[in-house]
Image 1 (cartoon, rainbow, N blue to C red):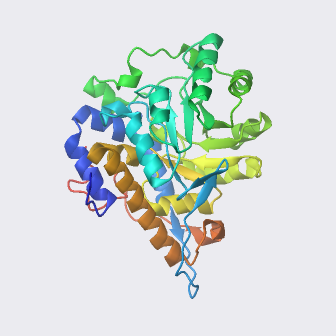
Image 2: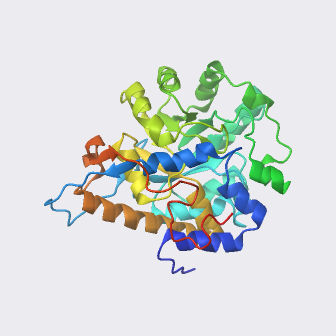
Image 3: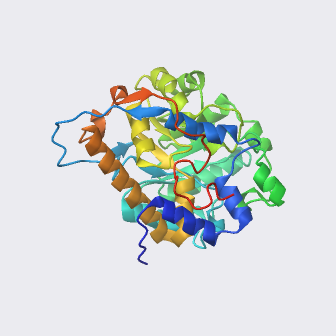
Length: 357
């Protein structure tokens, strides 16, 4: 399927046209006052570039690695629990798009179809994202399936001890498919000791998702994680939290190079990606932009969203005077005041109707 979108703004408009109001609210909204979600945008908009000139940028390499796997660019596909609400193929469409483009997708444990079907849909490396929803026997059985299916790593999400009060969904009287009939007692009881047991049972490279402070990043490294995943769940869990880009410097310092760092929440532009890389992230992951691509045109829409993000990254790298990601650093950034009030659509000023609520 060929798609002719020339900007990701067009993709978002198409997604809005294709989605019902309740699914749009699930994908696009946040918790309570949506302050955390808006701070994700505010934090990114509070950083300006400091470009260098008279540098040969005729050849630009956007390539990156994560846990030893090559990426076409430093952007991975974050786990989304109810992909089946966005496209009929669900997680299969995401795996196919990731394999086609050349990146890693994180597969949520509550995504349909089965983890085996999703794994078989593409030869690219995939990470299984775990929500703990049972006892040790449940975990052992699930992790055996994950290893048998060939997943490259395990990602434990730890910022969902309770479900965030997502008031757009609440007012719609709607729950996503992944939320229906799900209890939280096992997630609420997770501890660092349980993390150790899960890590040992899995025997795979281990990623801890939902880290928001230097203190927990230091503990994560002490417990032997391979990657620290900075996330506030896109502002959908704890309201009045910090932007993930604001968390990044202290977490980079706490990790001290002993684990790789990936960041999500609010990443919608190539400029967002490069700001995170400049501050020490190894890669980022996209959630909402991934969902918008799928809702716009399925697998083809997601691939096109990635291609457009890559185009933005190439242009910005050239204009900054860098040809490789490892040339980026904090010296390429400075603090500024955002130009306008921020919200979930303020990265896309040409959106018809503004926020498209």
